[in-house]
Length: 345
Image: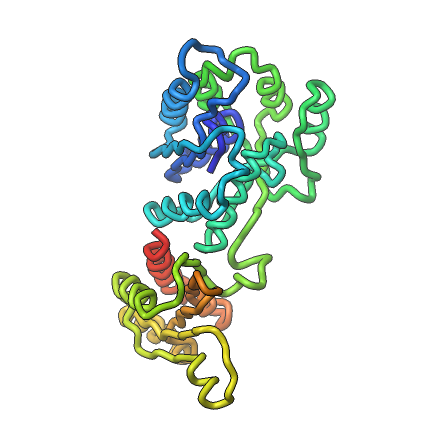
C-alpha cells in the first residue's frame, strides 16, 4: 500500500523482489498518480507518465497486479480515512493477502501522503485481521541523509527494528530506471541505496494475535450500516458460503433486558459450525467440543455501523497446547476471514 508511483520501487523494491523470489504473490495499491512531483525528467503529462512508469516497474519486480487510484497527490491526508481504508478492505476481500506492507509510521521521508497511506492500511488491517509490515530506515542512515541533503527522514533505533533482510538490488535498480521521470538526478535515492547496501529493514506495525488486547482472539470487520435483520442475514449468508451453518443464536440484549432489566446495544452471538472441520477437530481431541462452535458476534457500533467479530480458531491450539490441531485451525481461519472479507467488499 503506497502513496505514489515509484514508492513501490524506490522504497520497497528490494523487499518486494525478495518476496517474489520466495514465491510470494505481490499486488500493489497506489493511492495517487504522483502528479505534484517537482521532478519531471520526461516531457508530457506527469500523471499519465507516472501511470505508465508504475506498471513497467511493477512488471520488472514481478508484481502480479497494480491498482492505481486517482486521489490528489499531496492531499491524501485531507481525504476520508474510512474511504481510503475501504479501498484496502476491498483489495483484501478480493485477494485474501496474509500481510500488508507499508511505509513506517512517520512516512520514512516525513511525507504526509505516506503517513496517510499507512493509516489507511492499518485501519483496514484492524478490521480484517491482517499483519502489517512497515519498511523503515535505521536511525543512523536517516541522520546521515538528513545531514547531507537537509531531508526529513525518520529512522528507527536497532531495538525498534524487527527484521533485517538480505537483499539483491538488481531488479530494484531496473525498476527504478523504469521511473525515468523521477530517477534522473535523484541523488538522495542513490545515496540511500548506497548506505543501505544489501540490507533492508522492517517493523511489525500490527499483528492480530500480539500486542493488541482488543484483537488478541478475534477477527473483526466494521460495516458502515446500522445493525439490522438484513445485516445479520448477510452475515449468515457469508458464513454459509464458507461452509458454516449457524446452530445457535443468542440475543444478548433481549436476554439481559428480560432477566436483569438492563439495556445495551443490539448484540447477537451466532454459533457457527463447519461440520467437516468440527469432525476433524473432535477426532483429534474429544474435549475440543468445549470450544465449539465458532462464535461470531454481530453487534451495533453506534447508530450507523455494525461490528462483526469471529473467534480466532487458533484459540483452540493456544488453549489446548495441541499442535496437531493447527491444520484444522488454519483451515477454519481462512474460511472465517473470507466470510468477513466478503461482508466488507
